[in-house]
Every structure is written in C-alpha cells, then in structure tokens.
Length: 90
Image 1 (cartoon, one colour):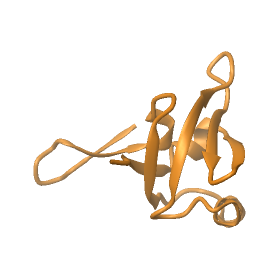
Image 2 (cartoon, helix red, strand yellow):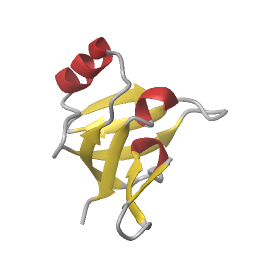
Image 3 (cartoon, one colour):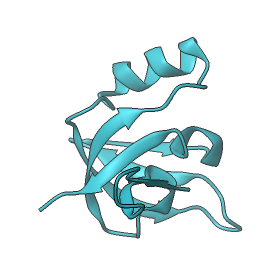
C-alpha cells in the first residue's frame, strides 16, 4: 500500500510491507487501525516514529516480514507491517 501526497498525487510514503530486502528505512508513522495492545508492543520493541530499522526479508510463501531494530530481530505479520509508514534512510 502506497500513501499518496494529496497535493502532488505522488507517493509520499510506503508501508513497511513494501520495503525491499536489505533496505534501511525510517519509521514515519503508525497508522490508525491497529489494536492498542499491538501498538504498545511495537513501542516496546522500539518501533516508533524516527526509528531506523533494517528489513532483512520475508519468510517463505509471503510469510512474515523480518526486521532488525538495533541489535534485535523481529517478525511482523503483513496486517501489522501495512500500518507502519516508512521512508528510505539516506
């Protein structure tokens, strides 16, 4: 899912689910629609706006997304990753 900039109708941000393998990205925003308990867990993991993370890839058969936040590795389901807006880390 790509979020469009309303003024230019060009991609403003992508979701974490769209991140390519080995991409370093910065979290921009957590979108509404996630269970509050899931949001709390994401913050506990360090996944919050401004945080840089590395997308390590996906599990087999379009499985969960594997990400590294600092020195920890986590997996995220598609439903969760699609609610996290990112931008490429330069």
